[in-house]
Image (cartoon, rainbow, N blue to C red; front, side, top):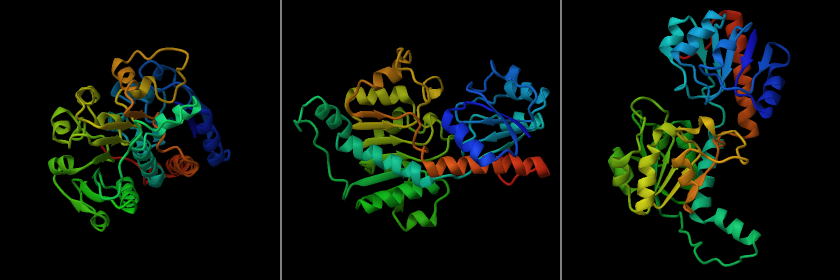
Length: 328
């Protein structure tokens, strides 16, 4: 198949070409797929997308009119694709349902450790010759309560890591897992928020989970608690989080995803300013840690993403179907 690969970085090209081994014709594009770039889709049968590409109904209609039959997501989430519009256009949508839950879970744990023990601040101090430890005090993770919102593969991996630190685990999920029950206890969301010293988000972005963390839920959280989001940016109402940071109610915040990340994440903007006032303000807080959607970014995950993406395209090219297709 002829495939237009959007939002391409050098590492995407390297891993995809290795997995492809010449089977398909891959055209690598740095641009995101959106309403502006869709009209230039020509001569391809498939579009390969990442998390910040936007396959809205108008975009899908343009792609379909230009011969697109397949959207191949190289990610697990699909909130950026209008599935009903894709079905109406006769476009099949496939995804990578799992790649490296360990990588994302380990990154969440790394964010907790860094925030708690102030490693980012300590690193900068020592580089400037300041060896004072005043203001760098953390707390023992052992014995603390960690709330895990979303206990799928990533959430369970994360829970296992935190159990290793000696933490008590409280989980919330609309579909409880027996595997999680071996690690901790399930509780209603208000109790998870109220009882947890650390709350970590690992659920998908769906209409019912958008802004799951908002003013009301933040008010329920224990004063001084830590909030971690390695799931999707839209799970969190970021302006509301900024307000509780300003009040001091929220003790610390780590974000690997951001609701308005499309313009910023994965790009080098060091030579220009950030015109998103909320994001710019968050970067000024010493108790806030932001990484640029890198929780997934391990060798193992990139190989799995690329291999599964190419397998999905090959399966569709041969049979017109794929086990990893998404139904609207």
